[in-house]
Length: 321
Figure: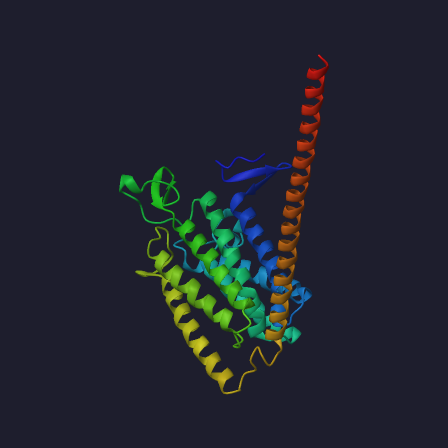
């Protein structure tokens, strides 16, 4: 059924590519994480599930259109829709997903900054998982490796028998670390600026992608420029500007801070609850350890008494003899 040496597996007679399957997992995990984090911006799980109905379809459409527009290939009308043949771009997915968030917030009267702060940790985690699928699809690889000492995974990988830098792995690892940073910022009670997590995502992902894209061997180009590298640099600049503007507006009172929305108190209460549960688990472990030690001492004492009784019996038997 499963054969990781191949690009697909069979499931009840259906051929399912690892690439699509792993991306689907990334989407599902992202939605679950977003639902779990919704409370940190005063949202409900139902809000995020409804938002996903806007975001995911538009993200898929955006990912395909981005690839079709910039790929060095003349697509027929039918080929544009043939996503099962491959050809998706993460940046197109981000753009399409952002449009989905804007539509969701506009229609359902939600604050864009709050929804974006919740969405971006899930987004970058989904990107980290999705990049694993690139290994099976044989895409998003780096330039050719010519130094034999560098021909080992995960530093490099073989694509059609040729060694290339594993840029998909570099980006997956970078995204995973970025997800940890964003989750910590989302749960930190001292942060008062709404939209700070979204801004940090633009900076973190953009800077990592700009560096990694320079090593890619299959980039999409406009002339001599790598499209995604240029867009990554724009993303970093936009993130810095957005963060600066949001901090300024919050400081001047023109934008409600997280504190005014009551989120810090909630986060503090959540953290206190987490600490309390950890303390309870620790106390239980200590209690179990003490009970084991107590039972061990009791058993040792019983064994010692039994040994004394046996020794006395042996002594009495010798006297009788």
